Amino acid sequence: MQEATGIEKLVIQDIAKRQQLGIRKYGVNVQDNPLTEIQWVQHAYEEALDLAIYLKRLINEKSK
Figure 1: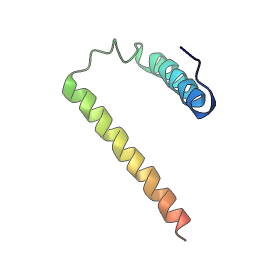
Figure 2: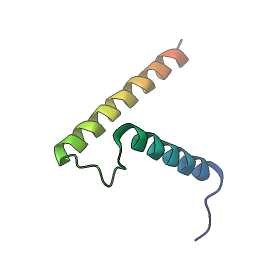
Figure 3: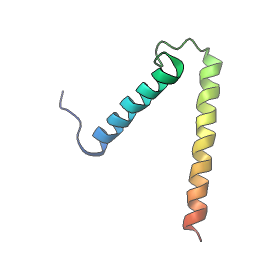
Figure 4: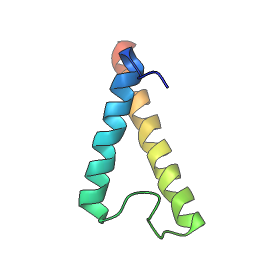
């Protein structure tokens, strides 16, 4: 398999950094985290809400 380059490589590096942060914070990686399915869905939902807020802020700033 060819190694990623460009933006894809940067995204992979960001994922690795997030994994290390998560392990430091929670003591396990996502695969080994014992959350229930509904807890995972709740986390994803909260992340989506945060993303919507960040995007709306940028839209408002760029629309002025």
